[in-house]
Length: 208
Image 1 (cartoon, rainbow, N blue to C red):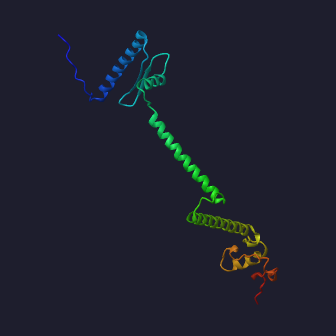
Image 2 (cartoon, rainbow, N blue to C red):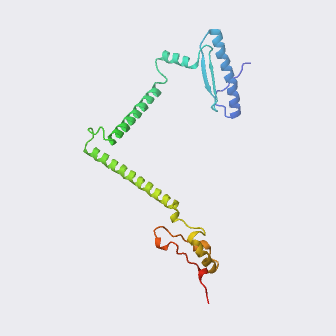
Image 3 (cartoon, one colour):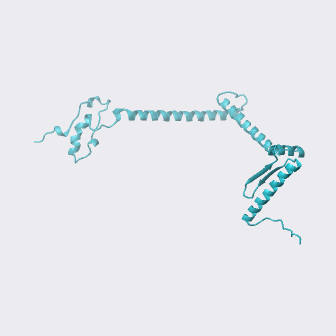
């Protein structure tokens, strides 16, 4: 009794599909090796499973690229021509961008201005003015920051901690209901020379 025909269609069960693929792949690889040995053929096989796993076979003494090159020569076409043309277009576009940026830099430095019309010169002038304003703004902000840091580090603008003129006020602070001594401490700044040495405290007063 003859063997019945098996209908060729996609195996729905994922596990069975993977098992069948593994078995058939092994058989194909075996046949490729047999062709290489028995017939002195150059064989290349590339396979991807439904899960994306990659398998390949190539006859000993050669490689996939060499066989692809022979294939392209045989059919008179290039597998990579489209990709190569895309790369060439991208390279040309990047060169144009680079050339334009270099020209813009030279123009901002006052070079290559002969090729610009009036509107382009006007736009370049506005761009330069805006850049100068931004630089001046940054410079002023930096100067202000330096001045502020310098004032904070200057002892003449600091608070005192129970030293100098502030000592005379410690007793007054204690007499006024236990207020913090530092609250009434002060320092005589150099711009007030007439106040130097004027330290008055409540402990100098005498009642009765």
